[in-house]
Length: 256
Image (tube, rainbow, N blue to C red; front, side, top):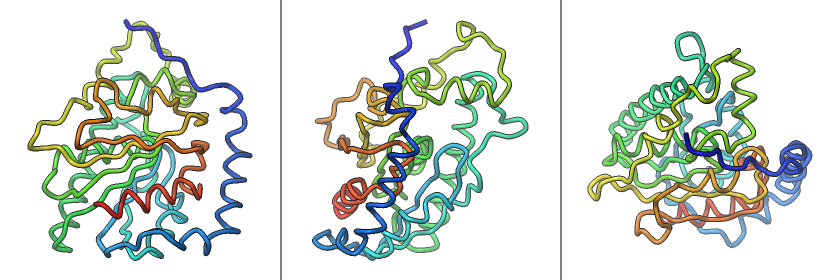
């Protein structure tokens, strides 16, 4: 088993909530000024995908901002993005299976939307939702015009602050050394030339949940023509309320 990457700095982790609160306050006070000078949207639909254990309600500020720019913002339809019943996560193989099931649901939603609306869809996913967005784009590339991920754990989940918490919540007693972490990394192969969808990975060195190393897609260079990285200063919980993240999204989505 390969050694686990270092988790986020503990200070960033313990200050997640107050930092996210400050980011939300900056958004509330500067909402009108934020939109000035940003590129307007062309009206195409953007499907936003929630983080683990959250739902569409947690993305309301982000969807409101995108609508103000002129985009359509259908909801994900995932409900609360949480493992239940047969999908309960007790080991990394279960997490990979949960990811595959949710990604398939997203791909089906994207295909239906593209057919109904008559145009391709942009996908914006926060944390684990970004993995669903990336995986769905590989399943139905013809229906997706671009993907943006926000602090998504593409790498080894042991390098996040959530891994041990998820194990405790699920009552997992499976030793780490008995788990196959390659099953988590397997859904992130280098896409074939035909399946490449423009993808932007937004990450923060001060993310207290998903470390920057884990948020960057391992083994793929940022100078590949279909992939780019954008660094921002944000907490993990603040990705959906942070003005700097919103400005970055507006710039990226204008090119989708």
